[in-house]
Image 1 (cartoon, rainbow, N blue to C red):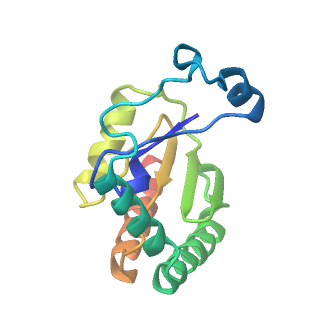
Image 2 (image 1 turned 30 degrees about the vertical axis):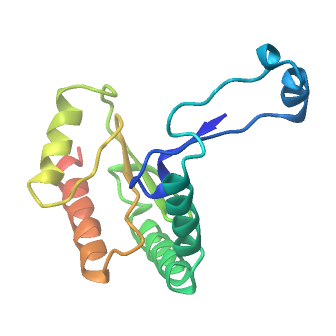
Image 3 (image 1 turned 180 degrees about the vertical axis):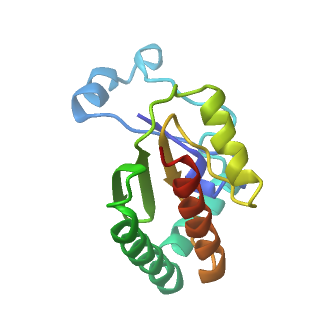
Length: 163
């Protein structure tokens, strides 16, 4: 598995390649040509590693942990509020991720999806619907007011697209 992006909060390219012990052992050798070569100029780069360490420290800081808990709680309250709405097929939360499946049949990428995307953009909310699923993945520094703006836009969309 190749991991990247979040390691440095998008500030510097860096990646990690992870695999099972069985795969690792299959490439383990003192002969260079048998090695598992998955490395580029950004692999183990000192500046990228420093950025990754700083990102991990920030991600696990008490302030960010508190914000993550706040977002997860706010999502749960909002999910409870809208779960019985006729335009909602299913709503679920996992930590700071909120996913709302709309009770609307539509293509994953099509005119209705594009219309829904524009609906949110017109309200200053950057949500990227994947088909009939709305995903809310706010940054950990989001304010209560900004989160309320997202929830209000979703409620407005539910009223607008309720058939």
